[in-house]
Length: 466
Image (cartoon, rainbow, N blue to C red):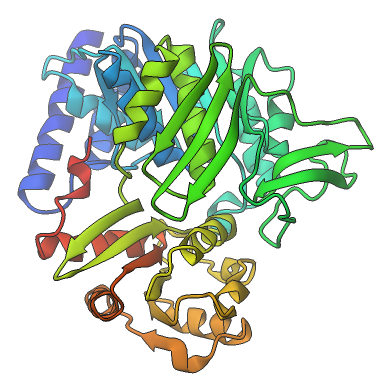
């Protein structure tokens, strides 16, 4: 069979697989079509990616990929570009392939200006080889799914190899505030940095979730002038001279309104641009700055791109607020120590009547849940913490033990392991307390909650998100 014949056969089979998966209620066809298409033509992703008129953007890192990619898509569409993406979060190479196959015609034609894909960190080198992107955006690196990813040094090396393999003329947009990201991108072709120059909490110190108290290059202690979140901040190493690079795009005058929104001023080559994002948390300042930096590399007008963020909606499980039965729940993905710490910190300022925690140990979560001991759950024992904690998930018992050792009064804790029971408990707390309950969930726990919300008619299938 000729190359074009294999491609069209692979695309047709993948599209049929996706349609059958949705019709049979087996999911949104976010991964399996990629498996089928690649079995027929191993070069299907490369062949489809080569058809994008402007090129491809790959977004990677431990936390923030889905939100940042969503913001990039919004800005690109405002600029008038056609975009193909993987908004469901299926970010392995099979998921990227499925997204491209679903968007292609049965003959294997892909009519798009840009591909904008979020990519799993371990999959980035392979994605770079196949997609040959015009831009790679690196957000941060921290401990995550240690039973799959193992040591963080291994993940950093994968990213370094991916950046070194970028095609000539490609750009790497990187987080200046993360010393691991800055060390692995230093000297690698065209690197442009973003960062936060004013922190909402200037007195913050490194916590147990920080993965870079020592220099990733020489091992000497890092000296932090400012900590923004986790181990991101303004640092220097007196051992080898590693310092935070000067960002091309800097977020200043930062104001965070809990989980509701962030405001800041972006300083860059085009001057100062006011930014308002209706998604809260300090990490979303970094995500928004990364998205705007990436859009500038793509050729979008920076002020127009910033305006597109004002109407942004949270991606699946990334701060979206769902109203149901006279109450509201805000869903936040929290799947590693750094992510859980930031979600707790943001939720603490909302005066929520309750806080839900959902811990699963599915394959997509990571089987090892010992990471909860590195998160600062002691904050939930503070007087300003939500008065009620709702504990759910397949590993609810582990959370209960962790909260006990964190000093949380057992009388404040309600156990509701199944998603339906946990959701009912949240809604009851919301109606009684008159506020929005925040639910901090691992990945498969978020999927389970979303299925329950879909069953009750509160949301549509997550794979239909744009």
